[in-house]
Length: 295
Image 1 (cartoon, rainbow, N blue to C red):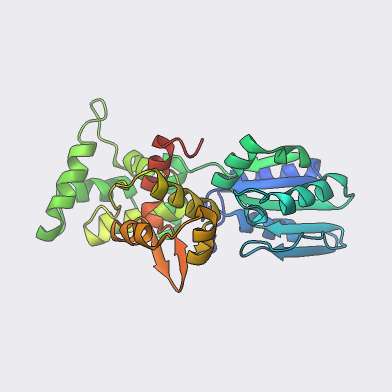
Image 2 (cartoon, rainbow, N blue to C red):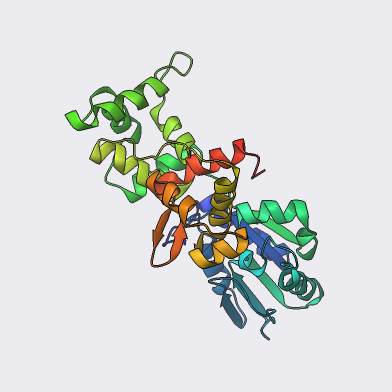
């Protein structure tokens, strides 16, 4: 899910320091935030390394490979939020806690937040390393490095002042009214970071929408009840989940709710899999926080 993104140098340096002092590490971050790039750094260290990728729900207990260093990607797939859905996770955590092998794992932050509150998962690891969301300075550095812009704030301000096309004026007016006053100064880059919840890929997507396409880029806040909101939580915490698995987790048919969520632009359903599109990440997260489904 990272798609080549590498966290800011300060985060990479802090992670390498973490590896120097800890034998078992849980790397926790939002989608597209560079979790797997940090594992690439761990591979570069001396010693034999085995890397395991969990790309979906685990049907059998995971046995740690025999190596000096074991890297396990996307460990949030080790559990299901159902009755008897934690057996594989419990077995894995016991193995991690009792091994002499260096074990570095990655986790979705929404799933980790739930597990941290509901289980003893943190006790299996010497260190929990969280990749923080980007602030305005980090966002500016990202946009300068990955787009053609030379002044993100100026380009965002130009869009806000002068909508690029007549068709974009309704979107422009909505954004302008929302961002008109922040004290006495309008700071459009701060607004972009807030709308993206500091997520790297969402930042780039919304920046492109606003400066090149002349639209806000975000769907509206999801207009759904609790049951459909729980589906959103399941999708966000798994990052990608099949329609069949989603129905199993929810314990009911989900096609009607998925159709509504897809029409609102907050999920994408393709080839039987459900994901949150990058432009919707900030609004989905804010909606789930209001519903108290994430902490």
